Length: 343
Image 1 (cartoon, rainbow, N blue to C red):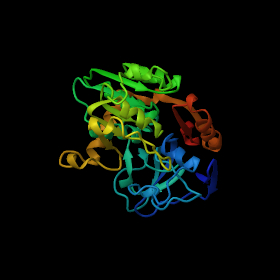
Image 2 (cartoon, one colour):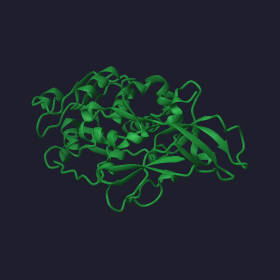
Image 3 (cartoon, rainbow, N blue to C red):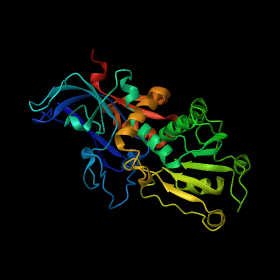
Image 4 (tube, rainbow, N blue to C red):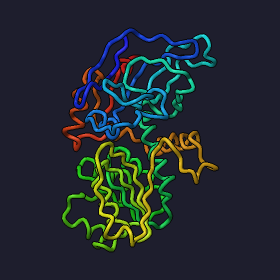
């Protein structure tokens, strides 16, 4: 039997049972070992904050189509190929693979949609591939320079991975902002110079921000998922600085203060999204090169220490409720599928 997670309505998920799938001539059958919840995009689905008229994902075949409940959603799956159709070339059975695929314990896919996991990386580390690829894309879009002062707003998993990459640049300073103590601790462990609480009444002084004159940051990454974080980003940025917006707010609206410093400060707002590479880089960067760099950064960062909770897929409702109601207790939540314990 196959077990598949579906979002039924805002705040409601269920695991549906059905017959085990059989691979077509050109497909392989994958048995899932682990899958990870995306605490950003996936929670927009859980909370009913997906904007109307926006497709589920125009670049991933497993998530094609228009958004509507019930919906299978997710894109961080690791498993092992256990069977192959007769037209599949190569030795796929037995391979460990990553797939941009929703949460289910058995699924079929063409080999071209799977990413073999390097032998020197464990399955749990491979779960972080999509978010690490996003972090790499943020670096390509932000283009941090030697000696710059950089601020990262939000230390969810994407923010933490971005911080880990930025810590490898020769920056003058790397300051992060995060409300939750658990994530502030992780931020410092991954290389932040300091991690501040955005609710600190002295935040402007700590950031060197002067009303109507800007702050001290050359480059700010807004990764909080909270539209209010964008105003904080603008206030923290120095004249002619850059703000990279990696958050996707879904249906949440951003009410911005563009009348005080933004205009005269000639700030640059950069939209960053992993489904595309900046046109200025097309001659040098392609998706496969970015993916190779993401694998290498996983080797260096080893982000599996950011896994805070593990659930069985049958307990999915509990997992999503925890992230929704107690975000300060979680960083990365994963599902362990039955095959994870198989020898």
